Image (cartoon, rainbow, N blue to C red):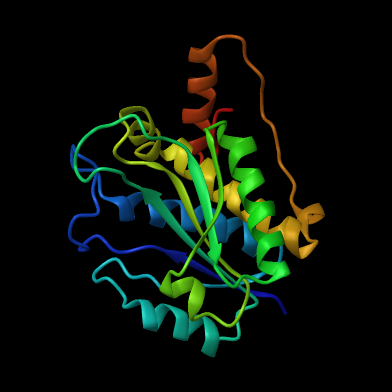
Length: 217
């Protein structure tokens, strides 16, 4: 049985983790984590989720859950910021591994990061090294992904959208499955192709009303 810990960084109550116009980072993190979780569950992967809506779970508790639960992988999902609460031009996606990373950790980062860049078409800021607690204190290959900057007006609009949140989460999930060798178990169903955007929006609304998950690509 494969176990993956999907960690949505922070919480609704975490001070300061907001865009200049007030978007809460955790709203993105949670939605993307849920989309990744759904992809993994469909492939038969057991998923642990250490985050909570009502309070910011301590980092030690997050890594303890992964370690005690014998997770095979740990992925922490975040939205980035630069320059405090001021809009600026810094943008793009970056993925972090620990300074003393293993070969497996490096491979996991490359699979997930490449799927995020390919899917979102956002600028590639690369795979970087850091001594973050969630990377240092976990006993399994662990990565932290930053899916765009809340302090960039364009990327903040993306981070606030349901479509982008789902795209990021599913890209993370597919990258994990590719690393695990389970990517072949994912299937996608297309219900239409439209030249007119309005027709695509109408189809999307109809599918969601009927209870199906759907996005426009």
